[in-house]
Image 1 (cartoon, one colour):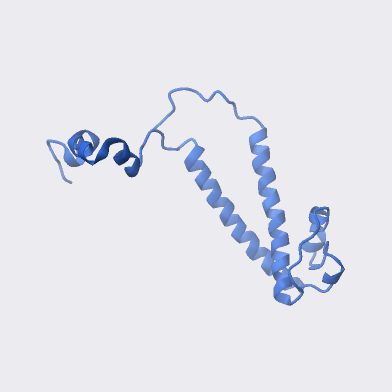
Image 2 (cartoon, rainbow, N blue to C red; image 1 turned 180 degrees about the horizontal axis):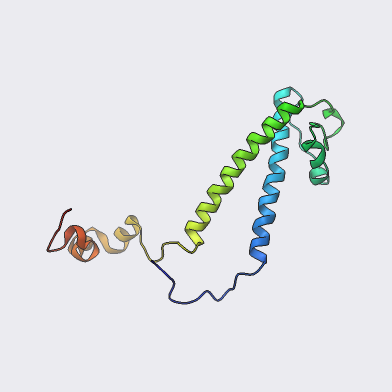
Length: 152
């Protein structure tokens, strides 16, 4: 159980959760368009990306099964509804996995259960050196190098 010796002077306010929620929603919206672009590409219509103004306005059309919603006029015949939904689903699953990985990395780094004050093996060798580590081995790892070694 590792806890910080002093409190965090910056309180949790609404800005951090709001930024996280907005980022997740943006990633999910972009995932819909990436899935649509992949479906259109594999259907032979080419890779197409909506203009910035159409990014959110075209979302209901894309989710309704229109592969060309929000794209320039050359993309009216895009992927079919089933291919569109399949590729959007695959893309969203991949992005959900990436978001979960980012969440785990963030919690390991800044979360309440993060490890504080532990050096990695490379950092310990850099600071102490191999000779000093061997001399201080009984202090560093008393379970392995102590005077009274007890093996399970």
